[in-house]
Amino acid sequence: MSDARLLETFLELVRIDAPPGQEAATAQYCADALRAAGCEVWFDDSAATTGSDTGNLIALLPGNIPRTLALCAHLDVVEPCRGIDPVVVDGIVASAGPTVLGADDRSGLAAIIESVRRLAESATPRPSLRVIFTVLEEIGLVGAKALRVEDTACDLCLVLDAEGTPGGIVVAAPTHYTFTAQFRGRACHAGVCPEQGISALAMAADAITRMQLGRLDADTTANIGSIRGGTATNVVSGRCDLTGECRSLDRPRVESVRAAMSAAMQSAADAAGGEVEIVWELAYEGFLHAEDSAEVLLVSEACKNAGVESRCYRTGGGSDANVLAALGVPVLALACGMSGVHGVQEQLAIADLEAITRIVEETVALMSAEASA
Image (cartoon, rainbow, N blue to C red; front, side):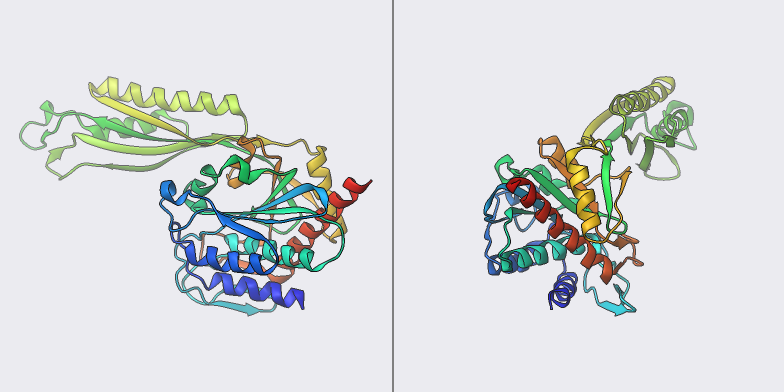
């Protein structure tokens, strides 16, 4: 019965439209489900600063041992995500239409809700369960960055928001920087007096050719995201805007790449006699866990007890786990079965949804056993 309830929860969630910034309906569904399970539920006041139509959802199911396990997932879904029509074929859930499925991160939401329900229905000892459902994750971990420290307090936090089959434990994620740069040259008529102009587009192009981009080493990448400038074919462009990023699992390395990218842009502007203004933003800090750390060993054992083979891996992507780690929260990101995320081929195996739910329950059982030992 509970597995059928788990699947139904997932299917109901994916049918709720929730592009970034419009998470209120999903949040209300989750709040109602968690309250029905016995949780105290509240919303923080982050909507005033994030621009979402709801705050982050926080819930607490009191336990009977003096430990707290936090469970985190996000409420928003990448576009195209409106009018999702899920279909189940041979144990696989996919979208019937030209949309994503929304398993990122409805799989995490559903697994957490069902775990809370099952644990609330059980008489076995358990730690307190803290639920953290964030907004605007897909456009820069915005909701997580607005969390109050007191709403994240726990002995361990599991973020259910990594791609791949259950058993995957993310032990390292990168520090990530983004930049916007504005090149300024001198506009003039391209056919009458081009020699009087300084092309901002040419400056930006020169800057790009001076950079090392793509995969720079096993831990490091750099990329140019967009270039925008110019007004007409007969005008030497006076302004060009460039965006890009760099990220690395090696903290000093990302700083050196950032400096090199800045130097390339400044050199290109200087060579042309123009100007460039560069603004860098730290998108999120990285984290690194030893594979023999207490947290990783605990979750690895939980995977084994759930009938799943654990595997540790490093990722080049970020999640709410990065933000929580920077707050000092002991946190691990877990794979929860989704594949093909951010595309219309996204899908989720029902068996994987059930497996990640069991892993959460087994983590609770192990924490309870440790506390009573």
